[in-house]
Image 1 (cartoon, rainbow, N blue to C red):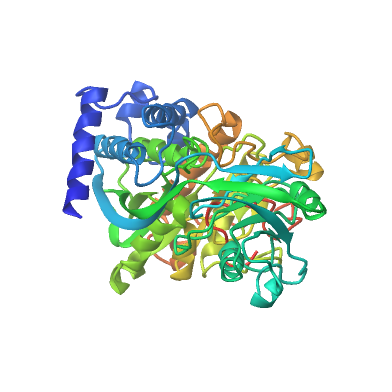
Image 2 (cartoon, one colour; image 1 turned 60 degrees about the horizontal axis):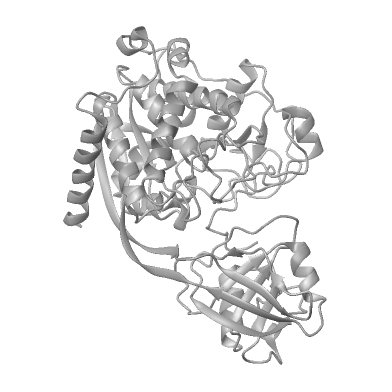
Length: 514
């Protein structure tokens, strides 16, 4: 544990040497550098797109120097933490690095899925399931016919020929349950196909330890394979699963009530496939820029910025943090604001539905979450921008906070969910295309960002953090300041058409039910 802390401190020194002895150069005029941005007007004028993009450029450079990734447990992530440490420390915050260990997963080579028979043979596009085991098998394929619980019950595998590859439809239970049942039935590999258009970016979870190759294909490919008689396929995966040390990093304001803490967070890690400059270099870069421009503010309430590690491994960092808080320290947290993927190329302005106003999908957040939603909705309304609710599905770092009863909220612009025609008519972009076509892919680079959405949402981050730094009375009755009145609710003119608000933020942490 100490060794990990020393490693981070060493990387901080190295990064400082790389960047020079002076503080990192960030966007902003001299007036912004000198003045106290203690009003919304002043702060939003100083939180700039250029400043946020400089942080994203730094994260891209780190990925470029580290095999194209910033995955927790790798040097690319350690360098990202060192960069954030320098930014926060240079701005005058009290910076803490929290090490923790987790079960990591790295794909050592691209998975291979090939049709061997019947003709035409050839490679088939597939997405490896996180935490898949390694293996190289060529075998006949058996498609499960169960519809209600495809692969979710041992009985679904009755008569399954041992040594075959199982082809299983998504739905009704976790991918891990399907794969475990297939393994128990003697399957040599598993292919899971989607139950809706689009790819699967799924996980078996970091508790999956079976040495079984598991990958996924689209709905169209899966249905075609299931209808193919005499199908023989090759499935090869080459993966590493093991214990690694990684980090959360926190920056806390010197001033503010330590018994009424406002937290704002974003995950800093990428997936194994790419640099993660949209997911989630957008949210983490916005956090860094806002923290910097608020450096001279003396808040009423303590501000604690958080950049999470191992989010892509199943919310490990944020879960570790919340679970290791004492009961007293947990009660001191007034609220948590989450910013994960806020600049999707084919964006929609989603706000987490704190009060479950659409009465569809996941329920409301803890008491106070509805008021957090109001703050974001008012920000959009003040700027004449449409917004839409999205469910608390538990797929980002607000999950552990909600589970602990801490009021939460935040923003999201969509992942691999597909934009509807109605959404395209409202927000522009392309109907029938993913909100982020590079979601969890190598092309999630500095160029995979809608700069308009990033500009708008970086200001929304600033607006909400400053609002609650000065007044949390709408959430918990504490920490109020007269010139930051409680924000009144504004009804959305764009109701959600599905429970998740179309976001479908299917991180590598698939929910327990699908």
